[in-house]
Image 1 (cartoon, rainbow, N blue to C red):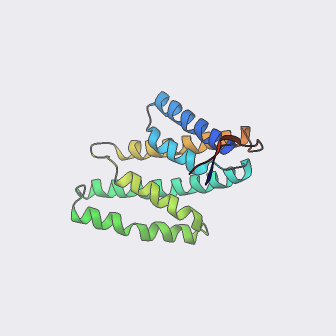
Image 2: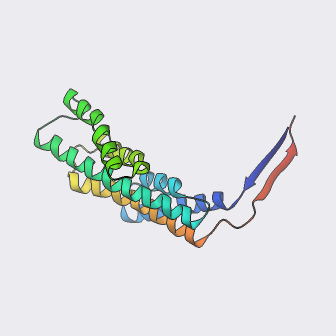
Image 3: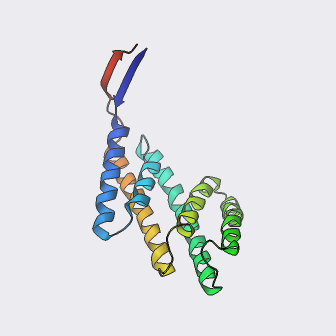
Length: 171
């Protein structure tokens, strides 16, 4: 069996996006985890596809973040405890309005990103934190990764041929 390991531009761009996302979020004290995920999900083979994916991710982030903020404010106002039965029911059932809003906005591709952002907000360790700052931070981290991926997709189009690192017979 022949194994080929390629090291093409998409891999190089992903490595750069991960590195830059971590460096930037560390500079402003953010959470690099969310930036790295966003950068990886937005990395595409060409700038146009990267822009389209980035736009979908931005819309999803805004919708999911808004729902997350509303939920955290609701939990706070109604004194709903983290991981209590009412909390769990609300969190679980919020998938319905989030997905339906995306569909109503004729943007079904953003639904999964909206849900990911929502659940990263309401399942995360937000206890004792100010909801606006917490949600704003998660959204800023995600937007950082999106911005980094868009920039790298624009600067480095995938026109280079991959380098063969390993091209040998394996038994």
